[in-house]
Image 1 (cartoon, helix red, strand yellow):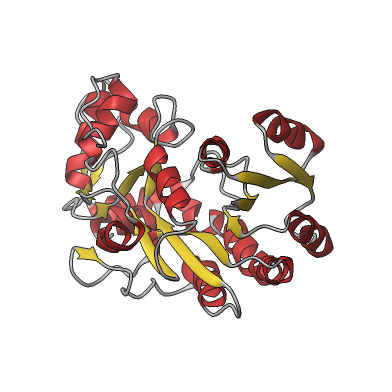
Image 2 (cartoon, helix red, strand yellow; image 1 turned 90 degrees about the horizontal axis):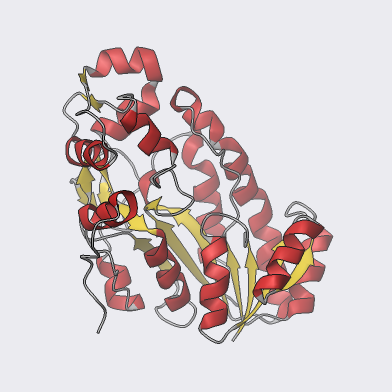
Length: 316
């Protein structure tokens, strides 16, 4: 299959390129610089150099590639998250999603693609409802979700294209915040990752390899629509933070009241730690055939962070 990938040098794009090539697909990939283009070419992909905000450059790259499927994995997230400015730090990615989606869709349609797959996030759902929610749950209100809301609406309503939205959970694994050298692991070691209030906020994690596997499946599995790509076990902060600290060789995390954390680290920290809803992956399992190698975050964290023996269920 002929694939066009935007975001090929990002956290998920880097492992996605060899996964697509290894599955026998031809990959054309967007690169912002000649240096990144050379790196992609060395992997076996066909690079096209253009800035994602260059409408004509994107059009030319996509149309020339003639893909059957276009994958959009573009983000503009910082290497380190400042939780006091968390929502502000989402603005560049919101702008990237909202502004580039229309002309990526137009280029895919002109190129004759049949399907488009766009990256979204599972943890942007509203902070109310049951502890674990499905794809039908509303998105959170306000500016943080506007880019996602716009992008998803355009993709799902795209004329003459099968629009697929993959709402990934929190990535862990190489190159993520939950790697041995990642920001969250460093905070745990410094005891700067506390349990806030009740710690009932639930994070849905996904190992980077499982996110890649789901993306490859989405090329030709499942109907158009939205899919949560997460593991089987949404984790309360009161459980995953102490385990991350233990695996990082740190002392147990502190317990802090929500009012104090709101003053020190901002509202976003409190929301994520106390009100975040988990996400069900049932639809991705049923329709995409998603079968995560790491269905439980504890096992995945242990393998990534502590070099523990692989305890993941081995695929048949």
